[in-house]
Amino acid sequence: MAGNTKGKKRNSSLVPVPLAEARLLGPGEDVCFRHGAIRKLVLHNFLTFDNIVLEPSPQLNLIVGPNGTGKSSLVCAICLVLCGNTSILGRAKDLKDFVKSGPAKEGYVEITIHHRSGNHPTIRRHIFKDRNNSKWLLNGVDRREMEVKDLVKSLNIQLENKCQFLPQDKVVEFAKLDCYQLLEETEKAIGTDDMYSMHQRLKGTKEKKVQLEKSLNAKKKELEEKVRHNELLERDVRRKETRENSLKTIKNLKMKKAWIEYEEARQIYDDAKKKRKEAERSLKRLHDRHRPLRDKMRQREAIVQKYGDNLKTHDRKLKEIKGQIEAKGSESDEYGEKQKTAVLAYEQLKKEADEQEEKINNLMNQISGLKSNLESLPPPDTLEPQVKRKTREIYSLNAEFAQLQSIQSELLQKKGTCEANITRCREELDAINDVYKQRLEMLSRKDRDAYSALKWLKENKSKFKRPVYEPILTLLRIKDMNYASQIESFFSGRDLVSFIFESREDRDVFAREVRDSMNLRVNMVIAPSNPLSNYKCKVPMERLRQFGFQYMLMDLVEAPPPVLSYYCAHQHLHDIPVSLNKLTTQRLNSLKSSHPEVQRFYTDDQMTNVKH
Image 1: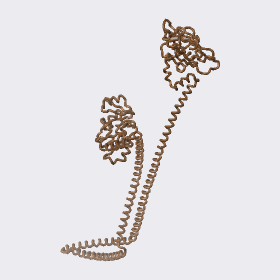
Image 2: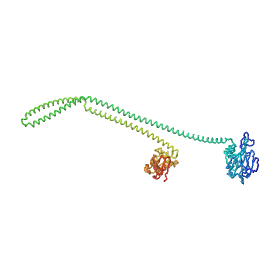
Image 3: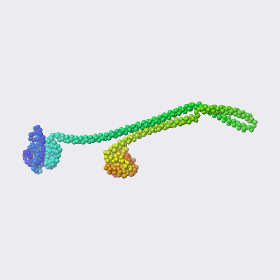
Image 4: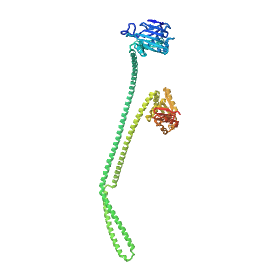
């Protein structure tokens, strides 16, 4: 050990103590000693030493010596007087253990440190065995430990840094440090104040750069994926635009067709209307031409009828008188005068009858003349059928026109209804197709083997005797999206990607093709033979509403009956109530006691298994 000693001392041990700063001297510093170097070390009743004073040379950097010569005691003294923790030394944990064994009740360590200002601080630490504590003196004045620590820190003394202070028991740990850790410890020991922090910032910047590069690569990959996806979407958009244009053309053509049909019907109606008017005019002309003759015929017929009636009356009276004469011929002479009167009356009546007969003959002659005139005209029998035929044609055309108007109105109404239904069906079909495409993409991401098997199934349905159902991920339809989270929680795991069969034979065919030939790992199940109507909930929904439940889980989904039958048979889909609200403890206890059949239910966003 280089340096001078005073008092009792022992040989040194092999322990490097890098306390002085390894840097250029500043202005005003001692030519020999560096800022923070040990100028003097005093030990009193410390471990193996009674009293010792060490004044090392400026180049002190290593303490060496045979075993048992006190090297470790000096290192412990330097550590404790410079506010070091006993854990750094790896020896005794209590301060009292550092006081020399024997009658001594206390000991101390004093150290003088070189300062570039010329005022070299002296630190003394008194250690009390009975109290197991210590006190500090700085230049002979009592100080708090924190003030001493601040002084040590200002001198850049780092006892925790193994490149600056290395006790013998820490040599193994020092040897385990890699080159990066040694560099950091060296920076702390001899570097400038901000060298280590700059190094850490540099490391952080490097890590950030690596992360940014990873993020950039990920973004590039994501961009490429989105570009590819966008290209697929553009192709779909073009197809959709072509389809919409075709549908629009079809719609326009249908409208044109309906309009053409309407125009044809209207033309037929107009032609029929013209024919009707022409027939009406012809009939009117015929009626006008024959009206005078008809009037004369009616007048003559009325006169003939009148005289015919009078003649019948006179004949009746004459017969009555003759009967009276014959009946009274045998009466007495008193009736002679009456007989004469009656004869006169008879002759008068006969005369009147002759006159009437003459008039009748004249009228009959007139009627014959009129009939001959009528015969010169076109026979009524030939006109009447024409009139009737024209009338029937008019009635037929009117009926046909009314029927065409009714058919036209009905067709227009049906056309509007059909167009509305077509629009609604197309919207529903587009929505279903969009949802189905999204479900297929989801299946492709979730289980690539199931997606490949589904593609094969669509192309080979003829190989199966009974229907084969796709995974429920593509088939399931949720009636009320407010319950989507509960339904998604129920249908999870392998259930979502399972193929469902109605017969074992079809299942075996699918397994040979998909599993054996294509080497795909898919899940296959067989639907029960019981129809869906056999699965009834154990507790009616009306009783469960009082606990806050709104539906049974099966009431909220749509899928083919065999698929739902499978989930009813194996997972009791029909027996699970669901609510959008949480159940209170009171309602839960009431449910357990009154309906032990309810084993599982969904509330809010969680599933609950009931234990009875």
